Length: 257
Ligand SMILES: C[S@@+](CC[C@H](N)C(=O)[O-])C[C@H]1O[C@@H](n2cnc3c(N)ncnc32)[C@H](O)[C@@H]1O
Image 1 (tube, rainbow, N blue to C red):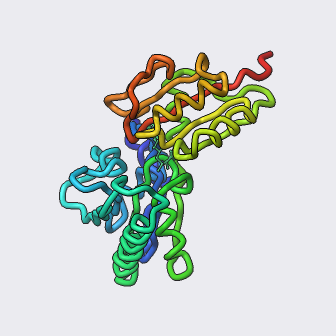
Image 2: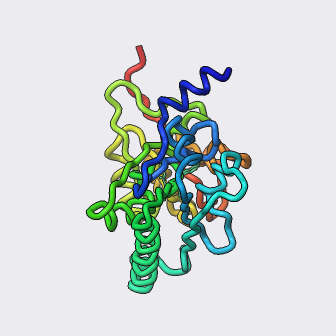
Image 3: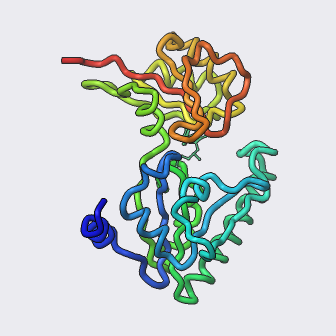
């Protein structure tokens, strides 16, 4: 981009307002898939906030690494646990509930000081995003703007080079955490499917896809658009567990003209 074009892009994207929380969708992994608005806010908010697992840099934070100037103020919100206990256990609910309350309080304190805070969200903030737990706690008290992002699933089907829905195809988006029979039933009821949160559920997901008769069409995509991306037929994927950033795609076979 030459200088006037860059200026035009910056003018269109705008900047951050004081005392406002931004939920910034940073896309599926490749920094080039950020929207203009997301990139402008990453550069202009007073504080860049992000969730991270213990001992990890934080995936959303890693995506924007090249856009972060040295010395920017950051708020790292570190999960006290991730998958040590099942997500529906009382222990998990209590521990993560307390963590989200504390995180919302920390963000609220910055907003009350008049700071603008950009909370990074991998993919789209309103699609299975931790950002939503902050949004529901803070939206009554503070101005919030949500910046949509390219979802992980669009990044994955683009990189796998498979159009996902044709003609009148229906698409099911299923968490791999569902039990096996629920997965089979949902898969049988739709033309195309995306199975998210595959991770340690990979073996079960594979069995469900096979039972629904869809294994020949299914693809496994790990870290789509990221540096160490892996794409292969699910049928060739024998591991019992996959990466956290992994999904299964089952493209539809609807009307092609
Ligand atoms: C908590 S959800 C977050 C979804 C995110 N907000 C989005 O818009 O895609 C995390 C799950 O998204 C899926 N996912 C997101 N980005 C991905 C990517 N780049 N490659 C593979 N799977 C991805 C994985 O199934 C992962 O377990």
